[in-house]
Image (cartoon, rainbow, N blue to C red; front, side, top):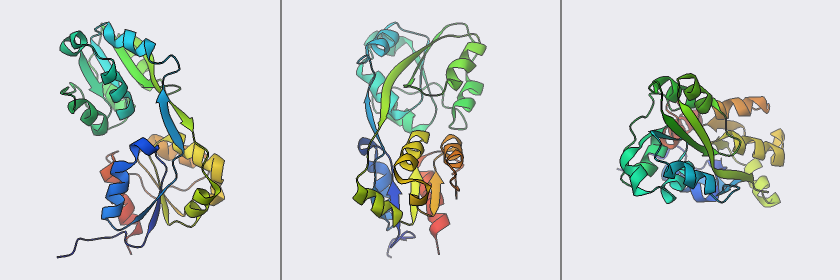
Length: 244
C-alpha cells in the first residue's frame, strides 16, 4: 500500500532558522510537499557570550525554566553536575522537553497546554529561586507569573534571534507557494518586513496562539492553529487545510 501523501504537489514555505528546520521539512516531504526554505531568523549566542546563563545555572537554583529547545541546548552546554543533581526543570512543551531528555534530564513540569500562561498556572508556589532561561526580548509572562507566586526569579538571556535577509529568488519562490508555516512571532515579523503582506502565500498556518496573534497583527488571515502546539500537530492541520 502506498503511503498517503495529502500534500503531493503543494509548495509550503518554511521560515524557521536553518539549524531548526530538519524535522518540519522531513514531515512535509513525507506527506508529498515541496518545502520552500526561506529562513527568516538566525539563532546566535547571548550578547554576553553566555556568561549570565553560566552563572545563573551554576548557582544551583531550585528550578530552571526553559521556554524553547534553543534555550535547552544552551542551558545544557553550561550545566554543571551539581546543578543537574539538585535542580528541577520546567519546560513549556514537548520539543523543549525532548532536548533535555536526550541529555538524561526528565523535566519535573510540562504544562497541559504548551504556552507560557499554562506553565505559570501549573507551577508550584514559592519561595525559592527560579532561573528563567529565554531568548533576548522574549515575553515576561513566565517571569512575572512566577514572581506573583512568591519566587525569586532570575531572567537570563540564553540566546538571541536576529533577522536574516532573504534573497529575491527565495521571496519569489515563496510568493508562488501554496502555504506558509510560522513557528514564532519573530519569523512572522521578519517575513512580512521582507516580503510585504502581498508576498505571503494564501494559506497561513501557525504553531500556536502567540505566533497566530503576531500574524493577525500584521494583517494576515490565519487558516489554522493546532490544539497541540508542536511541529507534528502543525503539519497535520496544514494537511487538513490543503486536502482537496
